[in-house]
Length: 471
View 1 (cartoon, rainbow, N blue to C red):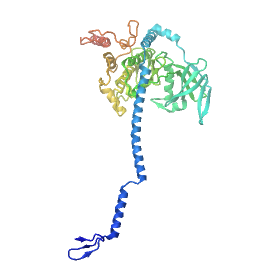
View 2 (cartoon, one colour; view 1 turned 90 degrees about the horizontal axis):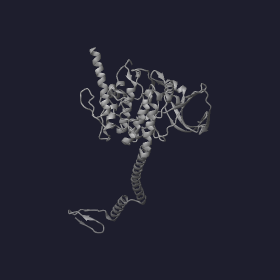
View 3 (tube, rainbow, N blue to C red; view 1 turned 135 degrees about the vertical axis):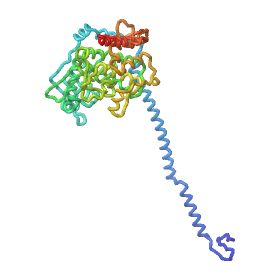
View 4 (tube, rainbow, N blue to C red; view 1 turned 90 degrees about the vertical axis):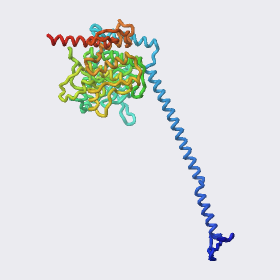
């Protein structure tokens, strides 16, 4: 086919002619090509938009990197704060802590010592008149003064009340005041009673105890004309010992021994005073930052024990299911089955030590029923690869988490591990030199003084049972 170079006219081979695009068609085709090229090439506005998106993407990456760096620094800062709060202790302070524990134990152990302590104990005052003063802040009435106490700050809010920080004007001592509302407490059901009954029980229990490792109650302001009930208690500024578990921070063994030493001393005083705590958990163990001492708190479900061999036997299961002992986790619907409250406290203390070491509970389940079934039927698993503990600490943990209460360590058994008597040189919960004692029923030797003494007690019990059976 032939074409004309000017007008693009072509001839067919058979002589027929057809009209090509011509000048007008070429111009239109060139305009279409230019428009398509313009559509591909970005305009200045689109250039600015693309550069803006690229800057945003780069900014997000930079911000993410900065955020990750800040989170890492915050984690390091929190770890340093925890280390400084609990673990920072010079050798001189460590010696002072040991001497203080030795002095406390020498005072609060023995019948004569308890009688002297009872004479030195400050009685809890009961005031039947409350004079309060409030201040309007942002259209809200804020408490500012209660009798001789000037309220300075809000410490926290709970399901039943509010806790304020206050200063006693005559003595200039800082106290914590818990404000409870009677009408609210009477509407809250707890077991067979109300929350108000629980508060009254807590007041009765705290009037019986007075120990450096237990949060003290100083005054009860109970005015019949007011709906509020005020409890003036000891101010502890270090928070609770659940903080390291929340932040997933491991604690060194010396600090764990100090926490356990203080908890055992406080628990020993409770049991000697005829009180079962029944709700021991890291949240209810407070840390006194000034005195560097752990204190037991929250006696809302505690109970007074009777005298005698089975005086600490209780029926109802109160407290937190995660810390229930196996004997508390049965399927008894009648409530006739009883268990030892003191042995249950020792189990709960062992669960606290387990959580401090491994940052998790020994048993976990999606429902309470499944959790109680696990506690009742399963054995405790110790992930030793997570936390490298000494043999003495592992022995203490296994002794506290024994399934059978008769095989579980008692407070008096833990005195071997927590050496706090004058006859031992190290009162800061250190085991003595392991000795071999053939005291268990099988005749095998044990290298641990705790298990040896425990096996001796079980041997005597079994021999006494056989003697009664033969007679």
